[in-house]
Length: 249
Image (cartoon, rainbow, N blue to C red; front, side, top):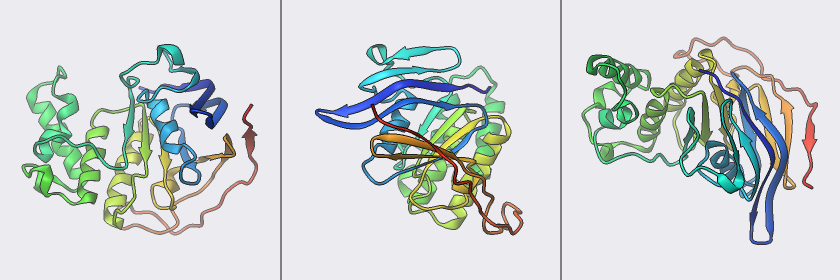
């Protein structure tokens, strides 16, 4: 399922400080957006607002079937929108239990659920660790578990906050496999990262948060390095410099 998120006059303030004011933005089906900006400009805050986890100071957010004003902002996140934190929130249990947590009450048969979980673990290269407790995992392995848990829910929009921080190349490539699968299904991605990598190479648009505003510009690029895991060919990365700036009011 594909959905669209649109916002109108969304702003975030902390006491007298305006973090940002964004008159309008849209995340449409199959969008892949690279969200950029300096530390402290509000990238994480914006992702949490878009997921319904944080209430904006003002404005309105609408999904395909629902509209929320800031005064009635939901405590639970929007359906079909998943926020993937830089430091994964994992439950006390095994790798298998964490990946399957979101589908534990689904109407599918236990056999089908198990097949989905095992498939997700294979995609992130953790099938041999299925019965291990999450406490023994490395940081990169924990991030892969979180990605597998998000992927298995088939989100329409996945918001990834610094997903590649401190990850090795193999871990990043594992995340790319799942991100590409979501895009092929018509889902959308918004990715923050301080460094370009194979994940940000999936993006076709870029948003900049600076001067309390959002700048949007197209970004055309392909993977800059070949990957044996993904079978990518050598090519060059390039971008379009035209942009539209939405100023604070």
